[in-house]
Length: 125
Image (cartoon, rainbow, N blue to C red; front, side):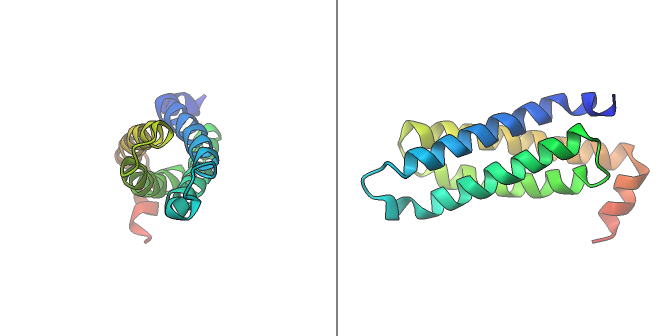
């Protein structure tokens, strides 16, 4: 099974999606929800791209590398935003986002150096 090489990244994406969903829900319960708007929006975007990246790797999609690069970018933005807030749910989300970003970057780099399809897809942009 080709997706087994991505197990660590898939796990990080799944954990990040869960943390982001939890964070968004918890942010909606904060006294000043309006102040949490960017955090909530990034949580939702991040959770969705993490789910997409996990699924793409699980099925060994030819686009998994590109999706993981985008996932890393969104995770970094979400982690940065969540890291600004002191609530436990935001701090846990920031940590999950940072781990996922690292795993996705590592996966995208590894895929680029090992896959001819990934190499040509990387130059197509």
